[in-house]
Structure formats: C-alpha cells, structure tokens
Image (cartoon, rainbow, N blue to C red; front, side):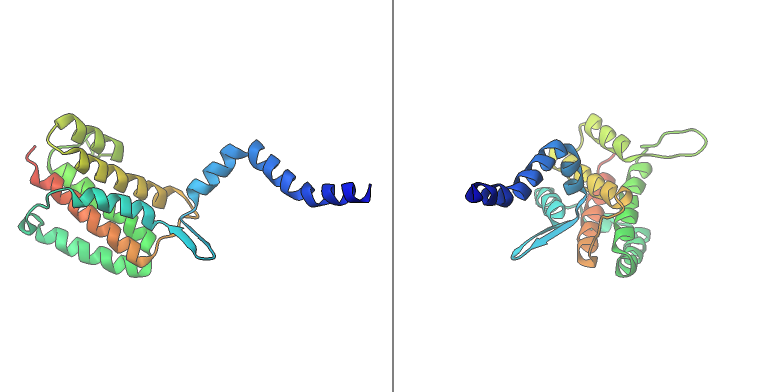
Length: 182
C-alpha cells in the first residue's frame, strides 16, 4: 500500500500539469506565440527566427538598383539606425513606414481628405496588381507580421541587431515597391 501512495505522490504533479496544459491549450499556444525569445540550456529561439524566414524570401528577390533609394530615404534609414540603438522595438515599428511611404508614392492610398494606408491594404494591392513576385509579397507580409508583434505585444523584445536586420529587409521591401511602376 505504501508503494501505491508513493507512486501517486510522484505522479500527481506531472499529471496535473499535463491535464492543465490540455484544458488551457489555446491559452498556452497564444502565450507561446507572444514569446519573442526562449532560452533553455543550449537551446535558444528568438525574434530572429521570423527574420530568418523573411531573409530567405529576400534572397530570392532581385534587388533594385541602389540609386532607386532616394536621399530622403537614406536619411530616414540613418535615423532608424540611431533609434535602434535606443529602442530596437520602436525602430522595427518605424521601419514599416518605409514600406508605407513607398506604397503611398505609387498611388496606394485611401481617404480623400487625409491620405492613409494600412498594412493589409498594401498586401492586397500588391497581390491584385500582379506586378510583384510571390516572394516579394511574402517578404512584405513577413515584415508586416513582425511589425504587428512589435507594435501590439507588450512583452515582445527585440535586440538591436535584429532591429537592424529588420530595417535592411524593410529597405529592400520599399525598394521593390518603388522600382515597380504603378
């Protein structure tokens, strides 16, 4: 009888944890989706995973000529690099404006009084135009998702190097939009 009690004691917590994880699986999934970095012993996953996915899309996209990037965009990129030193998360959010600006310059706006755009509208327009490769659309969608996480998840953390990598990808995405005639 004592052995049975010891077995029950040993299994009580693991069974309770598994049972609670099963009951709250949707909440646990949502919580894990919000984690920007994870480190356990020798294993580490982070914001960089999303960036790696976007970078692999960017590799297959033909880069527009450097001359396509206007001087005002170069100063904005320099400013974003300075912001990344202070607040990498803010730099990610602000880097998205490069894509929005490129889209607005090519006629993608809504609203008569105040011109505006939104991330989903940019993607819809790019897809509908038929002028962009699936890789370009996928890259901009990845950037949108990363930006959304940085904007809306309070516990989302970004390193300076990840913010700089995001900025490079945003510059490339904006250049692709700018290089395509509307």
